[in-house]
Amino acid sequence: MKKINKAQPPKSFSEFVKKEKPIHWSECNSDVKSDSKETMLLYEQDFLCGYTEIFIDNEDCHIDHYVKRSIDNRLCYVWENLIVAVNDDEFGAKYKDNGENCVKMIGDYSSIVNPVLEEAQYYFKYSLDGQIDPADELDDAKKLKANRTIEVFYLNHQSLKTRRKDIAYAIKALNDGGVETEAITKFLEQLGFHSFTNYILDNYFNKY
Image 1 (cartoon, rainbow, N blue to C red):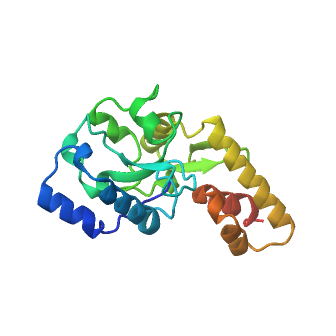
Image 2: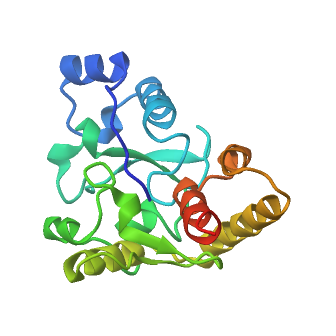
């Protein structure tokens, strides 16, 4: 998870909200949703899932409401509450809303990281085996927040850990082959997990 810098919504979204004054997400037409997804992926999220950092395209993702509509529907069309996420019930956005450790009330959001409002990447550290944990330098309150975020989004799901571990192996192979850091980052860009890549390079290779 990393910071998402929200851009301006596409014109189609702004005009739809202004003209139609919609209340429910079902009122939003497919063209507006498509424009919105493309804007978020291209200008805000570097084609990464806003929670897991899986590399995604416009076909295997959905627009997630960070604050669930059933908890506070007033945020349904607030641009800063919209994040593109992968479609998977076992982790990420859908797990946040429906999983074993899901958010149940508005107050629960204060106990997890909001990537739109916070520098999310600094809450976490990574191991070469793909494990994600709270960063060592956090105070106790932020460590609790990082831990709860990992639980709510299930960021240590085996599938995510395996993907991150595979990237770590690729980084080591490229580094051992004499490839420079900038080139490694560029080469692995479409594998996603940019925060993981940067952390592994900075903490396991570049420091030596």
